[in-house]
Length: 59
Length: 224
Length: 246
Image 1 (cartoon, one colour):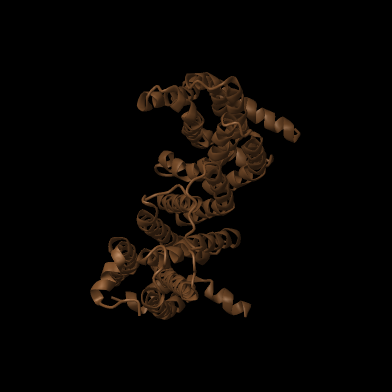
Image 2 (cartoon, rainbow over the protein chains, first blue to last red):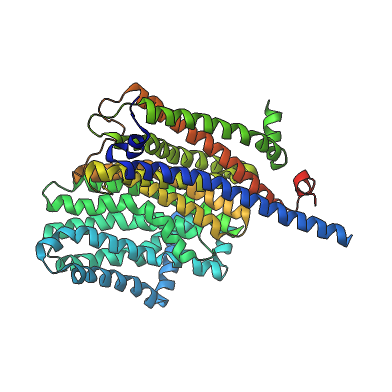
């Protein structure tokens, strides 16, 4: 094992800013993209539902 | 009418149209001159530095000037329906497109080549370097017209086409810029420009065959 | 065989299939990601020259690979959509572009964060970094062009031509940038040829790349499903979907 303590792990041998800056932004991007897509999907579904119920009422 | 006849007819017509709208043609030429003259004002008048940046600055300015005129390439003909007639005519559209690109180069590219040595003098380039600059632009500006035509056809009649065409074509201009400006730089530093120039010529040959074809495909989509 | 393939080439049949595949690819992405992170942070030893800073390459290399690979895949689907006039392939190309652009951005971002401690600057005009930047511009051009065209089929076809022109140009651009770089004697950076490239490091990089790959598939399928619903909203199969019943 490379690390003796959690603090050492987070310090990354002095490169904490660079390493966590890279991994953090990557993780953030990979989390935000699916969330935005879920939102996009639910928006489409909602507008489709509204359209369909309006059509039913008019019939 | 044979292929050459068609080509020259298209070129003659486009040149005639350009002659009637002189101001548009002159605008991009003046743009080239002004941009090239602005750089020393921003950077300083130190001759050693100017000699060093001259190839890059002149080439970037030429590239931007050539791009400015791209919108005119098909837009007017599209607006008045000429382009649709061309697509319907029995003559292959690719041939007509090639003629239009050639005319665009004669109107927008060739003047840049001719005025470039004058601007090069502002940057204290040697006569030899000026010659290489002219040759590199002579090979490079047709390449810019050919690649730009694809972008102009793709953005024809599209919202915000003017800005979009620059976003599409500028990344594709990079090899031309590298070899063009590199030729002059290599000559100044005594390495010889032959390698750069022959690569530029190779790119031009490639573009002459493929760009009109891609442009035609893009135009057909725009006209659908 | 071919009958089955053609059946799934229509959005109506692909939509539920994609829905079923998304959880599996997401799961694979999580598994590969966990394995890659574990290898990258706990198994791979500290680099003798670069200390712990080198651990950035575990995501940097994968992101760069994905950004290039996705451009090829995108151009492939766009080309299929253009030549066979299949709606689904074009939608797939459109769905891949934002993810590819994101990976190109991540590659540049992590490259800058890797470069700062290693060679003291955020940006070096290295052939690979410069080509990656140009690739990012190509993605942005594709997205901007498609966004500017209202008619979906025209957007598909125009995008396809741009993607194919881009694919022809990418090797030329890479070669020219490399040529330019050697002449200017810029910093030659070897990210992937780090000294003492241990087997565990390679394995860790591979795991992260697989994670990004599976992630891209899952996300592209999610996006293509949304695009299908948006574009085909007035078709019967969309109206019959269980999830749109009011």
